[in-house]
Amino acid sequence: MKRLQDKVAIVTGSDRGIGKGIAIAFAKEGCNVVVNSHKSNKEGGEVVNEIKKLVSDAIFIVADVSKERDVRNLVDKAVKKFGKLDILVNNAGILVSGTVTTLTEKDWDRQLDVNLKGVFLCTKYVVQQMIKQGKGGRIINISSIAGLVGFPGISAYCASKGGVTELTREVALDCAKYGITVNAIDPGVIVTDMTKTMLEDAATRKMMMENTPVGRFGQPEDIGNAAVFLALDASSFITGHNLVVDGGWTAR
Image (cartoon, rainbow, N blue to C red; front, side, top):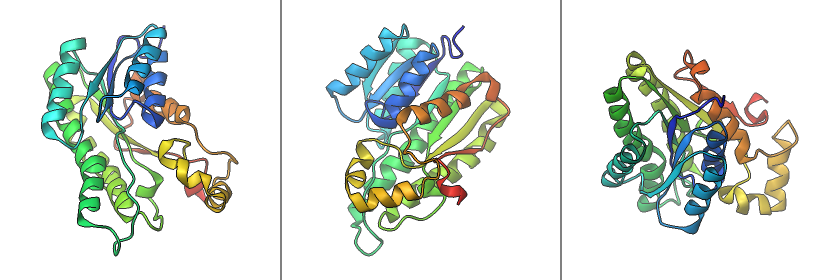
């Protein structure tokens, strides 16, 4: 039997990249998936079709996680479609470059709104639904090693991911009595649209490879596999934890 058979998951920002990798990994284990993006696009529909080929069900719902009305609509539509929610993966995120002296207030706010406020809003409404159901649940936040160590030139991103890492611990304490576990995954360098430009620069690519001891960059399925583990009943004693999946970057 598949390990997530008949479970229902919302995976934000799952039309591509890490989110897509997680959605597909869940579907392979029998999970029904709510695919999400902040805008309507063909990629979201393609992910839904790919999931259905794996004999799981899926729906694509457009919602900007930084907007409360959108998040409430996302949760309501998901429950209307599947009747319940078992898993939330807070994956949606953006990367805004800039130091504290060059960032505009608008850029700072947008970075924190999507990467941190979005986690708060989605968690709030999904946890309310899980408490109503009374059967526990799994919250998995996609943070970053940039929430553990500093990276030059992306101060708002580091701040947002540091916030996600600490919010994970706090919400884990609040939710433990309901049987809801809350954990984070901290990816290292993963090959996605977000990292494409950086990896195209030869010097940056060389530096990043030299700092990844396993000798390769991560793929979205690497994070998908970690998310499956944290979604399983077998991980029910793990909460408030940050699972680093970085090829050894932070072990140096």
